Image (cartoon, rainbow over all chains, first blue to last red; front, side, top):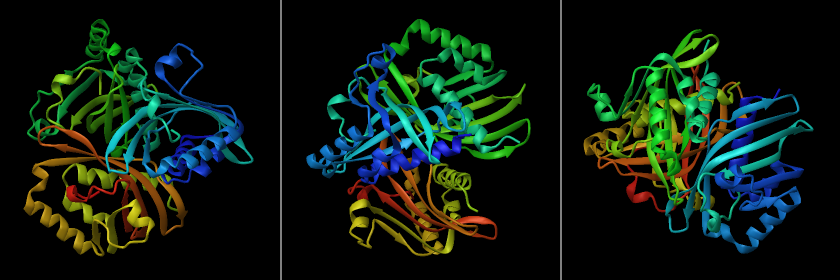
Length: 154
Length: 154
Length: 154
């Protein structure tokens, strides 16, 4: 049975990979045919499929990281994720669905620190070869106007 | 015995009900004769009973939500709670006292996101019919000047 | 075996001692010959030993608190720590190494609340006489420019 502690440990490792600038490890938290989206609560409530970011495979996530590295965006900003405890909606031996709140701070090279994004992950996880992986992560932002600033993964 | 994980799961569900705009579920986290207060650390230290918000029954919490719905305040702002791990002060089979730190971001319809309130819940929980419920939750804010802005539950 | 929940409970108690202005309890979370440093990610990456704060014994931490009390700095500001779940890197019966993300808000006497510092604790914990203690805590800040503002412990 996938439990709360296992999800917490998974999420902590996920956030650390991004915040420690080990972005190349990020796609490894997903299944090969995963869905990853960033959207906001209004779009999501109205069932609008187009979010701020959309990927439907791990390969697309890898492309995204490669593009970020070329753009060298990490020189200019860092993220810090603080994740809440998940609300476990369904759990079995081989999968789970859960919602996890997030706050993400952005730290510019100037030192300026702002609360960049808040929201909720809506996740579907599966266990493959003994490891938890995200089959789907939808990052639903609370604000409707973060799009132009998005760069690093949430 | 009520343990840390049970409290974490309870708090995660509590925060989600508010942040997902399912405010009608909020009073259901309390006992019928509960106490719910919002105050700040200076008032609390001096033992001043009058806080920013005071309710001494679940019915008063229901009234508060009804009033918020009429005022339609949720159209203009959202909250995002990030809760820390509780410090468990006492625990038995049928009850517990605990302190839990919180940060609450407020997201305006314009997209503006601010760190709205920080503080600590001081809680007394009981188990009734197998469910954890708040017999008392005092939200002690760190700032002494959030009163005029308070709208949604903390 | 030191586990995730034990670390969470330890960190929650650590943060509460600071945020509740019970600073005299803070050195008690460390071993007698501990290392405590505050630095930022650039210094740490380049292996520069000089951080923003450095102490290599519990006695130095006690001196620091005494100095803060004399300066009466707590009258003018409060902190609120929100800690994420630890990433447990190694664990045994008598020790563990872990990383834990933090966000710290600062609340001024005027009520102004800002996101003051974000970063990651890099910890080495030991169990002594049945209690977890920090043999080393390095608070690695994400921003390179928080130095002049530092006052309370992170």
